[in-house]
Amino acid sequence: MAAGPASAAKRYVGYMGDGSGRAYEVKGQGGLHQLLLTDAEFSNRAYRVCIRGGGGQIRRCFSRRLNLGFDKVNVSVLVNDKGGPGRYRVTWFVAGRTVAGWRFTLRPEND
Image (cartoon, rainbow, N blue to C red):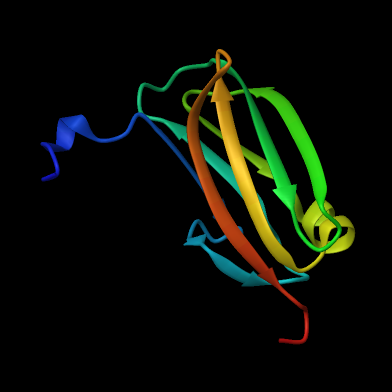
C-alpha cells in the first residue's frame, strides 16, 4: 500500500532516545535511555506507557500526562540496572487504546 499524503502521518509516535534527540533500536548498556512520546495534535492527554523485557524480564508501567503533545520518560536505571541486556518491548496507551509500540535491544556494556 502506498504512503498517503503528509497530512496522513501518524498522530502518535514513540521511540527510544539517548538524550541527543536521535532514535535508536540497538544501544549499549550504561547510557541515558528515554522513552520519547509525541502527539501531532499537541494534546495534554493522560497516557500510560509500559516497558517489558531484558535479561531480568522487567515489566513497568508509567502513568503520566503529555505536555503540549510531548513527554519523555527516563528509564535508564530500569533498563541498565534492573532489566539488563536483552530485547525490550514498549507499548503506549491513550484512553485504554494502544496508540504506538516499538522494540529495542540493549547490548551488554562492554560490547
